[in-house]
Structures are given as C-alpha cells and as structure tokens.
Image 1 (tube, rainbow, N blue to C red):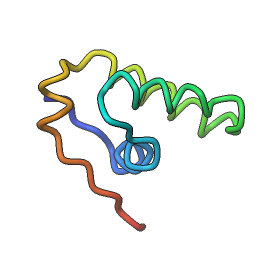
Image 2 (image 1 turned 45 degrees about the vertical axis):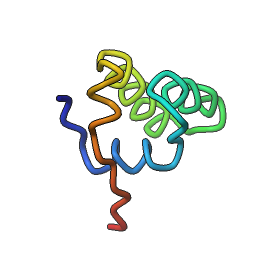
Image 3 (image 1 turned 135 degrees about the horizontal axis):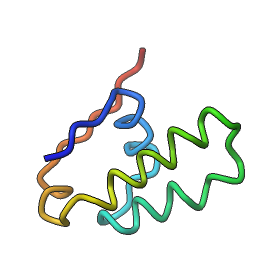
Image 4 (image 1 turned 120 degrees about the horizontal axis):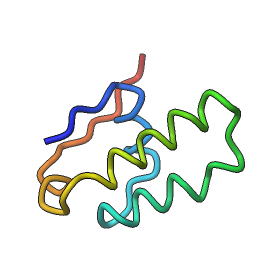
Amino acid sequence: MKQFTVEEENLICMYHRSNRRRTAWSIREALPDMDGEMRALAQQTANKIDTMSDADFEAQQFHFTDE
C-alpha cells in the first residue's frame, strides 16, 4: 500500500471522488489553477494514485489533517 505524506493525503481528501481514477483526474483538472509548488505536489500525488490498484485505493483511509 502506498504511503502518502500529510500534504498528499490532504490533497486527496480535497479532491476525492468515487474511485481512484476519478480522484486522480480531479486533482489533474485543478492543476492549471495551482501555483508551481502546489502543482508539483498535486502531480506527484496523482502519479502515486495512478500506480495503486483500485482495491488498495479503496482500502486506504484518507484523513484531512489541519496543521
């Protein structure tokens, strides 16, 4: 199972959709509205999601952490 940083997990929580593919798509759809550092984090996160299986993504529990 993939390990996500707090920042990646928060991003997933913000753009989470019904499944892995839709979540990655939702993150990528927002890329043009992000600044450079956030865009890099979002791309990295979407790429990690792409490498997961659907079962692993569904089994993962994502929690928003307010730092």
